[in-house]
Image 1 (spheres, helix red, strand yellow):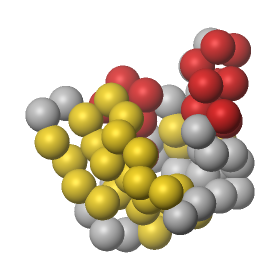
Image 2: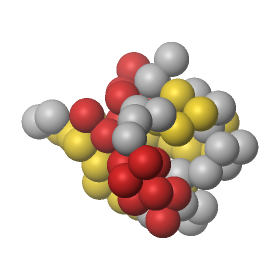
Image 3: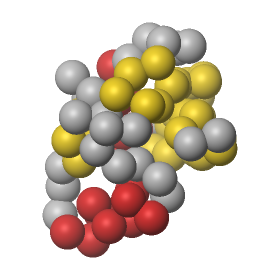
Image 4: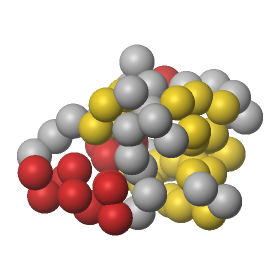
Length: 69
């Protein structure tokens, strides 16, 4: 299931990062690594605020679709 479909406040583990090599590296640099816990803090117009490794990060819904939980 992509991260964009996760329930707000529910902790999930990242199973896979999809997309092109550049997108995967960009997400990895932000802390989205396989096996890491991630929580959707809130959703807004076309984007999400997620908590990963003690940081809150805003990402687009398109990028969230590449993160499989």
